[in-house]
Length: 276
Image 1 (spheres, rainbow, N blue to C red):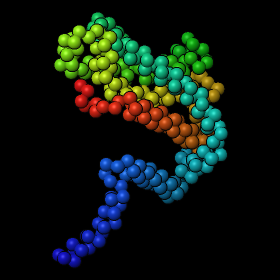
Image 2: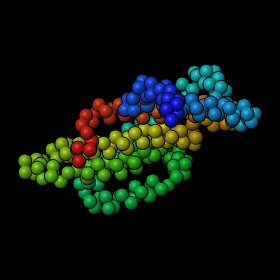
Image 3: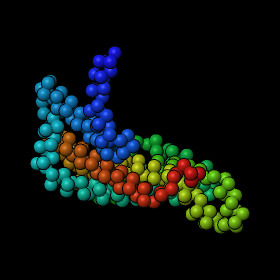
Image 4: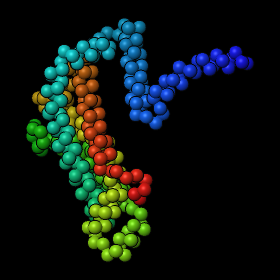
């Protein structure tokens, strides 16, 4: 038993040292584990390509994709610019309208009863079915892409904002009434503070979805952008560039998510659990 315990002790020592370097609560450990997970997926992907001799026109290997990124880095960057502009404008438009509509729902129950079902109906319509209609109505410029991006991120923000504005501690509302606070003061000091965690949760979802909306809009009609480059690569059977373009779209969405997360930490300096 002593020898077994000593052997187990020796096996656990390297793992214990690794755990000491990256504590369970530290951000370094999270980054390390994410990097190891991504690396394992890439290694498995490359191994499957080599093992089964998958042709490059079907599925490229990570090495092929990396080569395409290096070869077409200028093209990928220039294609990302219009998509970023469309996604950003759609993000601002869709979320601004969603928050304003949520405020009207909270303060006017009849408005919610009339138009909330309409919002649900619009959400149930596939975005790929709306995009051609918007192209006919708005033309082939940037406008239909922005509207598609706005529509695809409107509903999550609307639902979360309504819930956040209503997730208020009743005692806080009663205290504001006792202090003779105006409706504006109640809204800014109580309801907005309560809704911010919900709104930022929706923004982190919509910032990735609006990139998808911009790409869908570009599929319907465009001569530039990530969506256009995706279609061009597909028609040319250039699968390494196709995968590189997909990675570009993913990178844009991840950067947007990171920016919203940083703004959230800067704005919400209190414990969200204690605000309701």
